[in-house]
Image 1 (cartoon, rainbow, N blue to C red):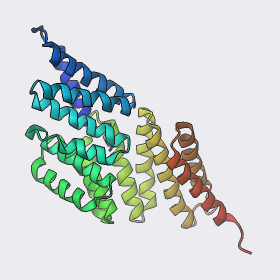
Image 2: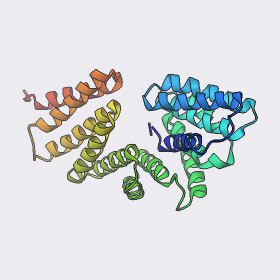
Image 3: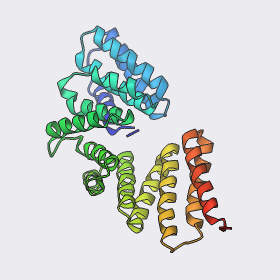
Length: 287
């Protein structure tokens, strides 16, 4: 998943500690490490993942130099998230595997699973998720994120009912929480699972719920992917004969194309263009 809630929670806790009652000034090296981490978090929040990765790597090194193993491990996980956001699965996996702090065991396993999925190492990802499930339990803070990754893995394995169940479980855990990005991810996964099950009518409102959230968060890639998913759903509706002209699917793919072109998302531009071309070919009369 791309802006992970765990990162924001850890950074929020860091800021809260810094804003508590007056205390002696931090030693210079610790201050430098915390400043690098703080700057990395700000850059990550702005979507400047390359700069964030450099700052988190620096923070990890500074924490390691003062024998702060927890701080070093935390920043290696931040680094892994940044590398994932940059699409660098190998680098993300390497950073996650260097974080061996027991307090972050579940977070580490979840990041390993994400990187392994990105690298199409499905067997390794299943193993990481199984280990995370054992360590997480029913009430751990990462339970919703775990369900989302399990939903992704299940979709990849064509276990459609399991995917829908995990996405629904994540939505239930996220209800009432300030976790907009994860909630949008859950709706998107639920929509994809419902579409894969052949239930386009139920998939459409779930996809639109994801789109509403991603628009509020102003996340171009997710918005474009939401429109692609809506286009796929409308394609299924078109084939059922409800909207045989394909106008709704065409409009959705065009929106995906427009957003992707404006944001420079070449892969999504190509996908949307292929989908529009396919609809155009379907509408041509057979000679």
